[in-house]
Image (cartoon, rainbow, N blue to C red; front, top):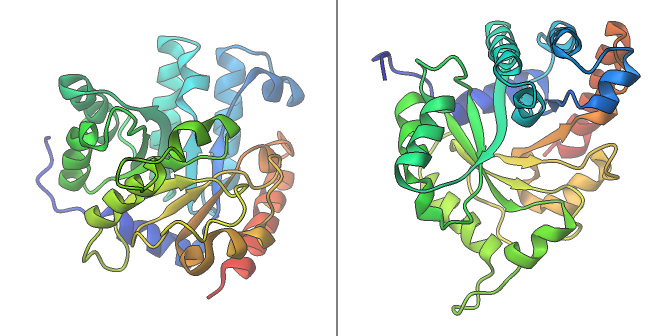
Length: 283
């Protein structure tokens, strides 16, 4: 760590951004089919044009961008360089960046992953990082500690929208609590006493239906994929998230990105989703 300047915690910065701009998170997912639909080649030039267009179109209006690291990493070092510029440009424009890398490991390896994305000295430094706790929640400690130190946040996979997730996340421990519920409880403990909101969030799919059997009140954000192309709508959010709906950060990727490369169409789509979500989650 090179900076000694106190940083406002991610949870507080996210709350302010959600209140000012609405809670919409737009994914930056430059997969080959989407690049093609934009009339772009599946190469570095296409990747760069795509990412720059999304940031320039939306950075002054959405609360959060969520770049998917894999779509940049597949191009090797040149793709990672584009990701670095995308993160820097988005943050310089005032948009929070959640790096969707889903890192999870143990010991020094987890510490290295954390350093890559949560150390302000890193060119990939992001406001928050998605992480996988399925080597045990304690394996995330290096990331938790560095996030606290740097004012960043984490989004821990808890109840994901993919059908395969249930075989792990809904499995029941000897104490009768499911694995997903256990992760939520850990996060609630991390966020205890934080005001206005903690920095340690959960990934909870918007397509999962009634989740009233889970305690989603973790005093932290709930990153909710599934709006748009996966079938969930903004109107579904209150039924899925209940009293915790005010802390939901709905993620939309294809539903917005399919309107590119037209900048005006991207902005109009994001505005429409943001308005629908703001109305649905108003509490």
